[in-house]
Length: 351
Image 1: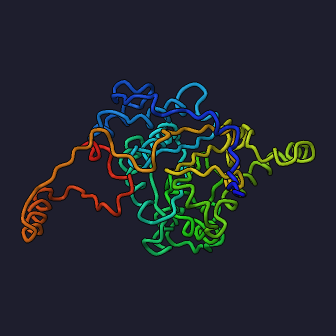
Image 2: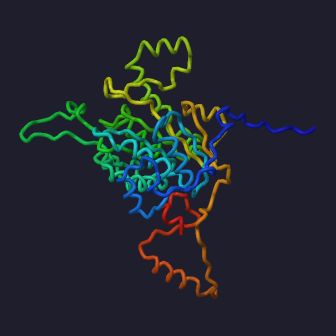
Image 3: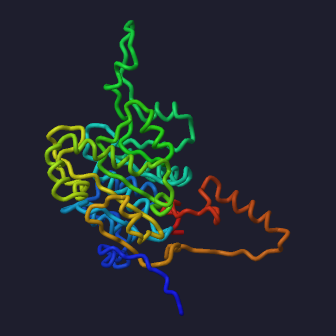
């Protein structure tokens, strides 16, 4: 008697995904609503068009009905997922005048986080936004000095650090972090707050959900929800008694930390080359009306315009040819095949 393997139940919203393959690459000058400053920044980086996954995400995040749903992007490594979420987030934050932490991107490893930070840093300054990095590469004191802006102190006056904590402000609009270092700042860094957070990106979702990482996800969700609950205690009490767990769906229209000013809920974007279909794991993300976007292809995908070459030579001459090639490339970034993560600059992946 054959024992059938139990298949993981597929959630209803995963049964009708948006097929990214239906979208075509779009020239930068034809991308609707793209800020001219971002177009210039992308052009300087060598981009002439957006990949299909970037076009698909752009259409769901910019314009009427923007970010009405949380996005789950299941796309292979090498398809351009990083810019797919970085570009719309930077575009949406470009009109903000008050500097505070509004976008948080979490990745499982330091190397991945540093590569994602490079993508944000290449486009965010064009619209006046600052990007921070918290991965443990430097001491926590150095990171704090980069992330938190302290008040200007007047000469001749003694200050107690405990008395000025309320005046501490974020120096960055966007933070790219690993879970461990993020928790360090949440637990111990004065002035570090998530009360203004608008966008939460969970990249490499499967890896981040596989391990607890000091319970970073429930902690982040708790801090972003607690401010909402403090603003609407009666409403949340009613929702709790009437609808149970539905009260966790963020529907309030008041921005956290700025009384009376309208702002949408915390938007979540989760990305993975192998997005889990396990309801118990996805439930941890507390997604709002999620939309699945997928290519339906294998985990790794070579860009269509990628060109490859080979050089036939004697085995003893291979090191010499390799050295000559590296010298010819100069400072241009090279890809180590076994460490290739799909976050290499899009313009270089076209070659």
